[in-house]
Image (cartoon, rainbow, N blue to C red):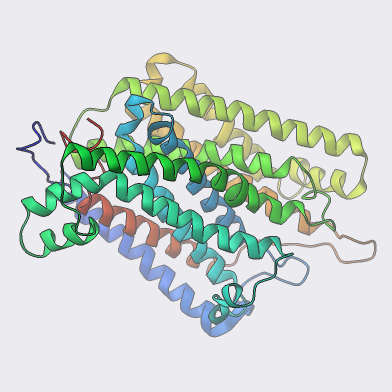
Length: 423
């Protein structure tokens, strides 16, 4: 990385070329399998899934709310640097913003693949329904993505300008385009960028909390026919689990990109701070889930009690105990409880990866169980497990996210250059 503002090194990308080739081959396999599964989804329609009129929401919806949560959580982590100005967090704010943008793109791909008529994806923008929570949510997503792009631009604009003057040819043109032609690197231009970066972050906080992920929770909470979802606590749980998964993902990316791309040492103080944040969010998430379960059992509402029994002891119990409790709460907490482990990159990658995977089960435990239990006596009991086409398309869409982030990490100054906007 750079040592002086007038003389800096910028060579992003994998430090090990063999690892680079292996990673792109892995992504290629994911995309190839996903493309074939998507072809089957398009040609065979919903017949290629296990979705029915009884269980109309499945894996795609679970992954959709999962990636919306990742995005909102990562964005809120970035505000610790850009809004609340916690110094060491500036090291990871661009990573957090970039992964937040990609997570939203992946989430919307899951929405698209789940549509019965995929060609009608633009309809909500032409035929608005002011009384529809879903209609409001679609527009909130667009505004939110705009905020994320704006923040990332102002965060790295000075470094993009410096790179535009440093490189010639196509790469120089690319950086100039990304900087929107603003190649001024004076102190006044830096101060201007910082002001607007903070303003965008301030606007984005309530948008992310109340409209994006809290709003996603509202899509479930307003479903009166499903008492398991119809809870005022649901949007809050969505936000906390978003912070949990987003913090875990940012921690993983910080360690891996610093080691594999920058070839630098991981800052143990920053890693310890991220680990403490993750530990706090795990405790709050577990507590809110326990409160939600206690309220459901105390209500003695048959549908709520039966749904929780499915989650705890029925066909979804393996997902709850092994992944939700074990992977997203217990195992990471064991690793996070030791101070020396919190400052060890490999251990924290393991803890973060466990939480990121475990939260997937949280999303499945939200979406599926409420649909298994009949809403009225006499209706058939639901049953659902994703087909290979559903798994294949999901893996392919996740592969798209991997590809987008890798290309960005290979081209963009996600690590602030010396003398850049945060120094």
